[in-house]
Length: 487
Ligand SMILES: [Zn+2]
Image 1 (cartoon, rainbow, N blue to C red):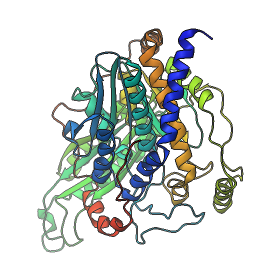
Image 2: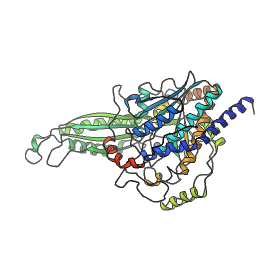
Image 3: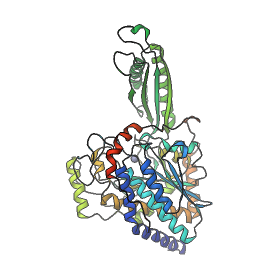
């Protein structure tokens, strides 16, 4: 082993010791965010709690970037290189669940939100890793700037394309995206789909539906005709596309012809060009629907994100650190909980993942994540860490079971270690970062990132507000009051 590697390994081992020393604080972050269980754009408790943890560790935190009130960027250090990490921490509607029991049991009855994927564990692992990297950089006088981003409303793919558009991610050399999984792993290549999320708003003329219907222009009919038009259009679309909608305003009551309606559509595809082409076709159909009904229409783009991709050179760095950190050692109780849950949901009864897998190319999934846009603008590596039970179903109670238990806590520690070690590699070894940048530029080729978000488009800050305000008073009694205290 060369002298340089020995020194780097010693620095990583210091970072790991620091993470182990602070493992209860890291777990506290994940658990606190689990019980806040805030929906996208309403992550105010989450934002305060986590920003406080980073301030206490010596980071400067700027809250409310891109006009998104709960968003923050935390910065430490100065000069180059600039290495960043980002993650999401939003919850899911109607997924309230008591953690640690293998059966459906809401913590709050009646449809309260809950964490049912593991975004609460993302932010614990991210902060643990970033704080540890900062500690060893300070001790060893390693130069550079470390940036940490909290990206609200991932479930609606909102925030990171706004961060990029507004210049909040300028000058970054490489980023990590850390996300929950059932394994400690990474991949390279194209991982997910691109998406355009857009509201179609129809305006007509209201009138009494029985007394004077001929005076009206029915905006709900326009929504229905757009639905029919798109439904027939599907036959002529590329098989790769996925498109779906909800009608979130269909009028008020039957005896009133609706003058205002709104349908929220998502157009997904394997690349942003196809997703954009489908959005353009949908606009034509909306125009036709408006013409047929005598209404007008307009669109409001809520989010545009490119397919997530991961740089191979970064994946190789992450993989080498995964092999150093290894999977958590699970206890018998943790194995039993996992198996009981698998039995309850009729999944294969395999327990928790125990082995690390070799590095492999990603298989493109039809899901989306707004980190995709970042991954085309800046070389990006993805770290998956194992807070989930294999076989659990995301966005349902079964995925929530492990998220505030020792399974999640151990996985957060492992994710934090892989992140800290991978950041250290890029801060210490300029040749590694050069290779990341060179291979990224080869991988991207001529496909340079551009933002489709209109320049003056404002983020939808009221998204989920009423729903969250309804539940918060009932959820408050479960909040963890104790703040993070780093050793
Ligand atoms: Zn997610």
